[in-house]
Image (cartoon, rainbow, N blue to C red; front, side, top):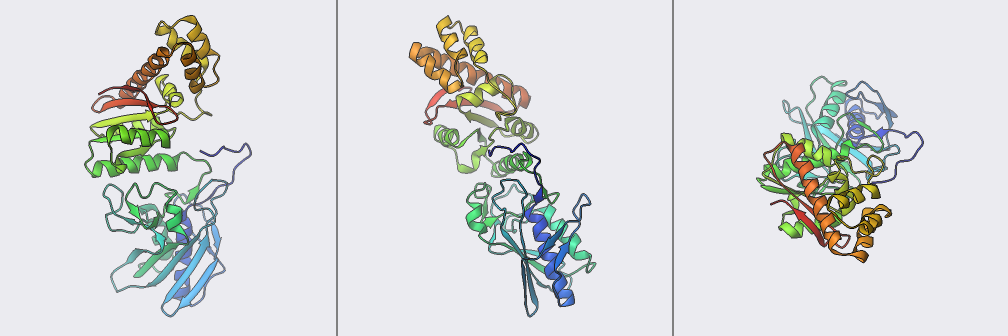
Length: 361
């Protein structure tokens, strides 16, 4: 995750808000024959932002308008992208029909809040667009095709492919506002990943703290890609969602440092919100009856990985004992959070993806 700046951060607009403004601008051109210079829309919480149109095109019965997305100070992959809405009149009685243009994906797997075959335009943005168009006509019959310039390439940097969204990005944003460095987008991605795995009937998923442990746990358990959940630091949010949306089996995977935090009871593993001290590892080794020299090596280390290296230089068997203890306690913390009903195992991997310890079935 990118480092959070110390100064006050500027908020931005979601792709859904930009798409709604673009659609409103294009529809105004269809209705009046002229594009506005700026477009103002109303968001679900009452804000009324205004957007300048970066694209204005009329071609007979079709109008296209575009908004350059401003994500504020959030490190958003779509910041600066051109979000385009093309509108044309539809058959009487059809209402508003949404289409996916270039750079916007299509849903191919069940489990998302959209049916298979639908354009990946989430319910929140659809509602904002409907409200924006209804201000010009109460019940318009119109086709709305949304595009994002370069969206297919941008989508390769997101979780869309794993969620079964192919061909581009999703149009997202419940509130229309991007909060810089918000955890909500990542946690929402975790939840959608679990939904897709459940809808596919998977009995076993694996949640990993990073890419190395994710690849390693996939090999360990021979899992399909849609069984992999990129939980990052948000193990608490992931477990909370699983408590209400259960699967038969969960594997937790991570490096020694983050799994040691979980073993100590931390449910947010980010370095800014939870810490692991050498003294924590030394106390754990004391409970294992490790010799004083091994405890001191752990206490003086700057990280869990360094502690393992120092211990290995003294007596390698204590690295295995320490990792096994952490895996067992991490599993116990997860089981307590899930309150039964899910089989859990925990796997700890080193930086090369080699298994250090495994606890559970």
